Amino acid sequence: MSKKIIFSGIQPTNTPHLGNYLGALKNWVNMQDEYDCIYSVVDLHAITLRQEPAKLRAQTKETYAILMALGIDVEKTLLFVQSHNQHHAELAWTLSCYTQFGELSRMTQFKDKSAKNEENINAGLFTYPILQAADILLYQADLVPVGADQKQHLELSRDIAVRFNNAYSETFTLPEPYIPTSAAKVKSLTEPTKKMSKSDENPGASVGLLDSRDEVIRKFKRAVTDSDAEIVFDEGNVEKSGINNLLSIYSAVSGKSISDCEGEFAGKGYGDFKIAVGEAVADAFAPIQTEYERLIADKAYLEGCMKSAAEKSLRISGKTLRKVYKKIGFVQYQ
Image 1 (cartoon, rainbow, N blue to C red):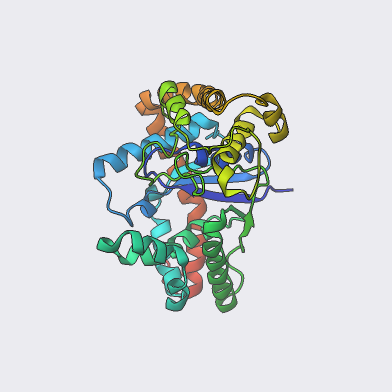
Image 2: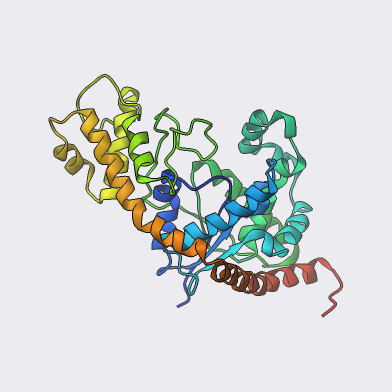
């Protein structure tokens, strides 16, 4: 029996952080044996916000190397850079002709991002859910890992696929959401009611995967907690958001249950607890950082992996695009 296909992508904007790792990327690694995984560094999506060219190039390579350092096996998993495959942009244009303006107008992320980016509300910011649909549908993905903020976009992808299939016969697989039960929801260290974000302007709010050991521990030492002195998990209690967040992080990186973590720190102060969490995170990052440094230093190998992946992605996506072009009536030249 063939494995189900999973597609997911990550933007190369700033270094992936602890929240990305525990909430998504750790699962990307774990899914490789059970599914046919296709992962992409989605740099086309990144340019809806203005990017510095040299920085974007560097961060694209950095993100690719980090994913490999985490354990993405390029021998069995397709890991490619989105802009290396022109089929994504081509299918996105085609699908835009099968997407209603009103559907895009209802996308809450467009409203949120427009509010934060008033000086550059560009057409790409409005239409990028169609590019997301193309990313997924090109590979006939069965499953797409999604968080709460992406469910609406996956539903749009399904709506577009249904509309096209109804018009031209079965062409696209209808993707289903994949919601891992083990994914940790990591919050900001400075505002623990908000999720940890790569775009947070406060450098102390997130912990980057490439942060030094001292930097990691320093950020956890300064993490917001509360005036209570008890290290207990109290879900739903806003006052305990900081401690809840730290306990969740410690549990995720140590592999211990929340109750075991509470028992370990019973009677101890917040200071000792925050240092312990920082040290546990730094220990988890250490082997990733060592492998990353090895990979990023080997430019020829990294670029070779990218080239091989681009060629493979073009072969797979090309089958879908040719089928689409034939069905809508384009003249085939080969």
